[in-house]
Each structure stands twice: as C-alpha cells, then as structure tokens.
Image 1 (cartoon, helix red, strand yellow):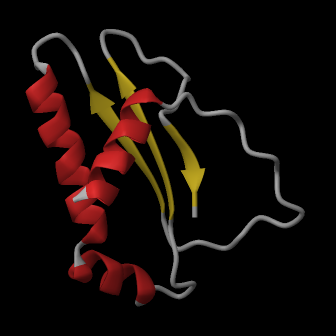
Image 2 (image 1 turned 135 degrees about the vertical axis):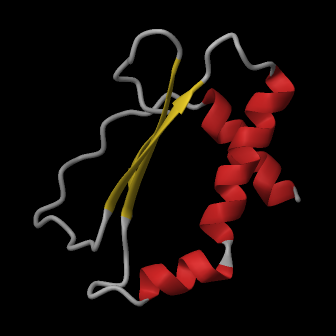
Length: 96
C-alpha cells in the first residue's frame, strides 16, 4: 500500500523534466501515452481512484506478462494530465 501511495504522490505532484537522450534509443514494443482528463468534473477522491486504477493495471500480472511476451519485452510509458487545454508538462516523462 505504501508503494502505491508514494507513486500516486509522485504522479500527482511531480513536474517532469526532460530526460537526456540516450546514445542509442532503446527498442520497445509499444510507446504508450496515458493522457488523463483532470477537469473540474472530478473531485480529489475521483482523481485518486483514477490514478490508483492506472497503477493497479500496470502492476497486474496479465499486463506484465503481455509486455514480456513482446519481441523486445518492454514498453515505454508517459503519463500526463490536462484540464481544458493540453499542456506539455508531463506528470511522468517517458519511462521504459
């Protein structure tokens, strides 16, 4: 439970900084962007529930098994939130 709360806190508060470009891009099977609406139609409890759902899905054994079954066995994920207009400040920059 503590790990999930820590991750949710990071997702909710962190401002991503661009990562340095690696010497050679890592090969991935999928580049997944989680673009999340955080408009005023939702309250803080609903935001937390939504984030917890993403965390639970990404940790699910079936999801991990599917990722590992790919040719490269890994994916890249980016997560950002927006309300009204799309901003370019990712909450979680590209991770492999």
